[in-house]
Length: 81
Length: 180
Image (cartoon, rainbow over all chains, first blue to last red; front, side, top):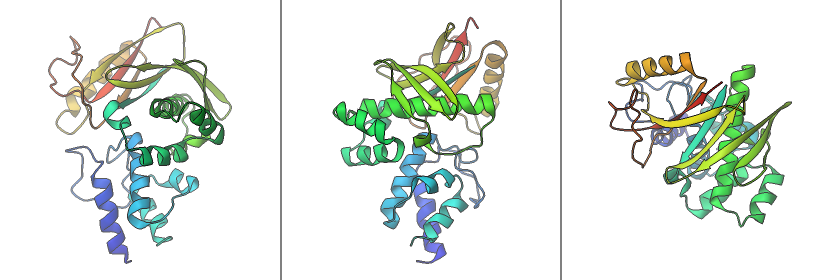
């Protein structure tokens, strides 16, 4: 799976949980899921579970701890698919 | 100082398979055992969740912790159906749950003798930010305050006479610590 494919799928997952009106014009790797995209902490769990389903991978507790930006999520997924 | 966390009923009403996966992501082995003893109740699971979140928020405010997402690192215990204790590293917190028709709220107060009041606040976005920030500023001057935002709230507003009457959509819970 190419980096572009991963990114497209990941953005699709994250989009679901960004509150209406909060999505920036350009989504960059350094955007913080909670601080910049205003995703509620409760929905971080949903994002992790959706990533596991979409990419058929398992996210460990340690990886989940670090999955706070789009870029971090990209790195973790890319290493597993 | 006060910290809270809130989940709506809509959020907690998950399909069973998803609930089990959430449990495995957020609960310690001791908490899983407790949860199983309680018939794997959804409410028990999410009580653990909001208690952990509120504890983490309190610890973050007191000790400026780096942001992380590690609910298993904050083991919690039920002291009763309404009260819990949570451990954040060397720090122990006690708090209470409020469970009603709106959802599940966990509240931790630094001064347990004080009284907390909770009401709905508008979710922040670009359009509402100025008014919301003004409101938070006013509240924080007079009370230790904690806010929990939810993206989707399926309940009616409790209209606050001074701050919330101009908003048609409630999006979060504001907890005020009074008499502190």
